[in-house]
Image (cartoon, rainbow, N blue to C red):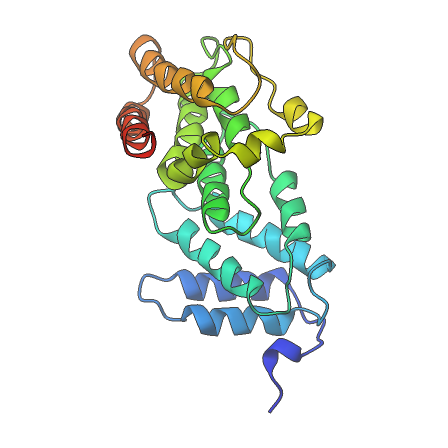
Length: 255
């Protein structure tokens, strides 16, 4: 019997992949992580990493993730699946999945603001599971949009989505992100391209780097915005918890 990891097929279709994902994500755990991984790998060509099929699978993962609440286990389970696929030897890097990630990046809108929140939750799980090398860029973008820009003219639901989207990074990737602040390797290896990507928004007057001063500004702004701006009850609850979490991370990490 052929090892499914070695099958050189071109049988990928979004319908098949999404059916498999839904089976894996059912509450009754109808499909195990290992079974799901094998089923997905059977759809992919032997040299899968740079294939169109892997790009398509990334798109399908985001479709499922953005329609699933950050309060559910979906994002963690899909991140675990991607981690397992990466260990298979068939997908040895996630360049095409990274392209899917960038392709799906957007701002929230008033028609479906939850998609933005769920996207950030999913990507935060991505980085926490080391699907990609540790990097704060997407977290900085979410924080800058929510906390370094003036959201006063945004609709209530959109303003809340920005804040909830930023909060996902602290909920699921906060400890890892904070460790980067104290990691000299990050600062020694920060490039001019990084600095361009990390430029601050108009409300932040500090340097456009990832450091303790910027982290503490974000914490201050989370508390300020939910007091001074009209946001949803969910947003107040989650961001209030995030302020406490940021305090806790600082106390337990800084010596």
